[in-house]
Length: 113
Image (cartoon, rainbow, N blue to C red; front, side, top):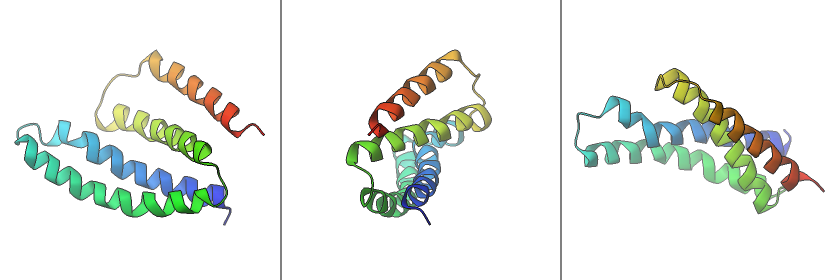
């Protein structure tokens, strides 16, 4: 499998775990102490790191560090927007579109050879 595709798939999976680790406690554990939420989040984040570290190592074999970082940011926003809309049930805002367009510009410039 192509290194770029493999890296993208693994980073997407790790971002799903990361997003849930960082934000799902706001919906599911608001009645718990913060340190309980932190421990649960660390448990979820462990799975994120078990996927993210190999993804970055695979990606770094072909991509520059800057390209890897921009790819990560695009994936983060691509995972975060559906999470916000579907899971957290927050309204869609035009800021999502503008942020996405800014990231597309970043992708263009960082991958331009």
